[in-house]
Length: 493
Ligand SMILES: Cc1ncc(COP(=O)(O)O)c(C=O)c1O
Image (tube, rainbow, N blue to C red; front, side, top):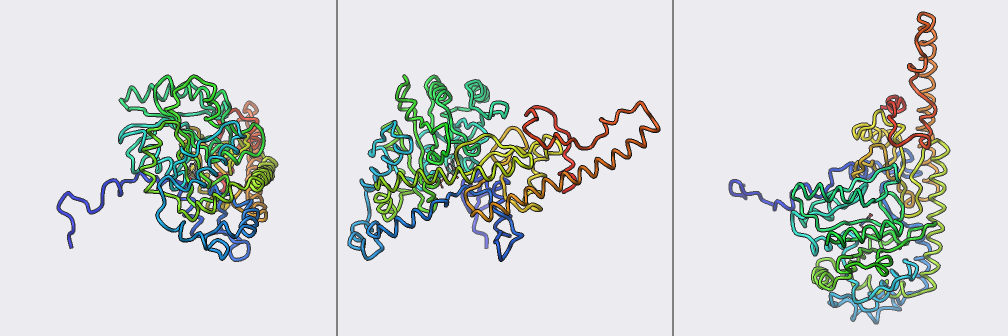
C-alpha cells in the first residue's frame, strides 16, 4: 500500500539522512565485535573490544559504597520512605542536593581551583545530550563549529544530526603532538569564511579524546583569546577530567578564564559522569554555561533529556560523601595509570609507540610504520587485518578525522587483566610474525641480490631490500618521512 504521495517520503529527511555518522569504521568495529565477542572460555578466538571507552576499573569501590549506604537508594527497604517524594515529577532544575553534589564534584576534579555554581548545573542525557543541547543553544542549522582533529567520532552525530550544525575540522599535526595552535585555528577559520561558512564557535575535548592528553594552560589561554577576538563560543567537553593519572594535572577552562580578560558569556563546559565515575548507563550529562541566557535556554531544553530522579537521588548522596569521593578519585587514577603502563610498555617492547599521554581511557597508537603507503586506504586495510585476523577492535584514526593516516585509538580500561594479556599476546604475535615473514622475505631477496650482484657488480644491494628492521622502531621515524610499503601488512592481507 502506498503511504506517500509522489515525491513525499514517509519519514522525515532529518531522521533518515546519514548525519548520524554510523557508517564510519568506528562503528563497523563495534559490529565486528558484536558478531563475535571474545570470551576467555566460550569464545577465546573472538574479537576483543578495544574501541569502547568504558571505565569499570573501580566498580568494586562503588559496589562497596552502595552496600554500605542502602538508604541512598529509594528501592531498598532502608530508602523506601523517600520513594513517594522522588518518583513524582521533579523541577527541570533537578534536585537541589544533586546539583550541589555535582558542582562540588566538578570543583574537586579540577583540584578545587574553581568553584562551580549549583544554579548553573543543567542536566542532560549524558554528554551526548549536553553537547547537542549546547549546539542547539549556540548555532543555527548551517552554522558551523571548529573542531580540532583528531576528534571524538561521536561528534559527527551529536553536534550535527538533529541540529543541522556543521563541523569544520582544525587539522592538528603529529609533529607537535597534535597541539591546537592559534595558527591552525586561524587557518580553519579563514578557510571557512572564504567559503561563506558561519563559524559560531570552537569545541574541544579536554582531556582529549582520542589522544589521552591534557591541554596546557597556554593552549587554553590561546583558545579563550581566539574566541574572544572572533566573538564566537568555546565549548569545552571535560568528560575525562578525572581520568588524569599522572602529571601534568587537568586544567579546566573555568580555571584559566578566571585571570583572563575575556567574555565569560562565550564559555561553556560540558561534563558527564560516564567516564570519571564509570556510569555511562546512568546518562548523567551536564551543560555548565557562564552565560545566563544559555543556562536558561538549556534548562528549558533539558526536559528532553532529564536525568531520572532516582539516579539524581543516589548520586546526590554518593558524591557528597567526601571521604568516598577522595578515595575513589585517588584509587581510580592509580588503577588507570597501572593499566596504561602495562599496555604501552607491552607495545613498546615490540616496537610500537604511542603519543605520550596521561589521561583518558585510551591511548593513540602509531602504526604508520606498518602502512603499505601513507594513505587512508592503507590505514583501512591495516585496520581490517587487525580486526579480522588479530581480532582486536581498535579504532582507526580516519574515524576521528585525523589528517595523518596510521594512527589508531586503543581503549585500555574496559577489560580485565587477563584479557589485557590476551590482547597484548595477539599484538606481539602479529608484529613478530610480520617481522619473521619479512626477515624471510629479506633473506630471499638477499640471496636474489647476491646472485644479481655476481652478474652485475654495479648494482647497489640496499635499494633492493624489502624490509628494514629500523622501520619497526617508530620512535626513530619522523612523522613526515615517507615510509616504504609495509611487507607485514602485505603478508597478512
Ligand atoms: C569526548 C566525549 N564526549 C561525549 C561523549 C558521550 O558521553 P556520554 O556517554 O556521557 O553521552 C563521549 C563518549 O565517549 C566522549 O568521549
